[in-house]
Image (cartoon, rainbow, N blue to C red; front, side, top):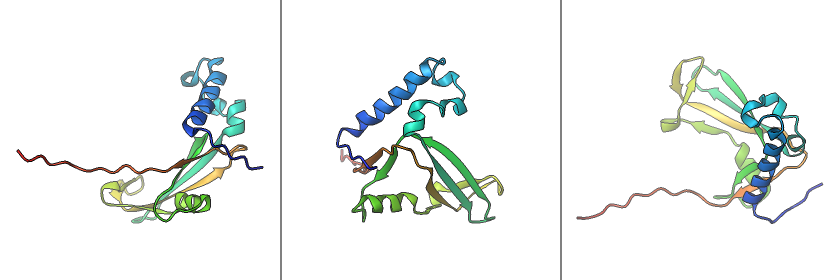
Length: 145
């Protein structure tokens, strides 16, 4: 089943996080509850999913995988993205890490070029998709004195 909601997604995100916090408050709060126990709340069972981040060192080809719990999926809408499918394709596309954004390989023990790719490892029962429709543009103003 797919349900589309046009409400303010920041409000939705805040509501879901507040409900999760309320579930954990009875156990001493988020900071005092083991992460594995946090995954057992009703809110986590409904809205929770997991992302997998895989990074491959392009020097020694060592692969590192990390998993992250999510309550929503934030997708950027810019460039060639014209649909939700395009946004998901862009989100899961491999990203080259180099230059100022090099990866510190645990095997090489050095900053190296690498390739990173995100994927949805566990899809939530209720998936909240946040569409990020803006970009941060950094510019410098030079004043003439």
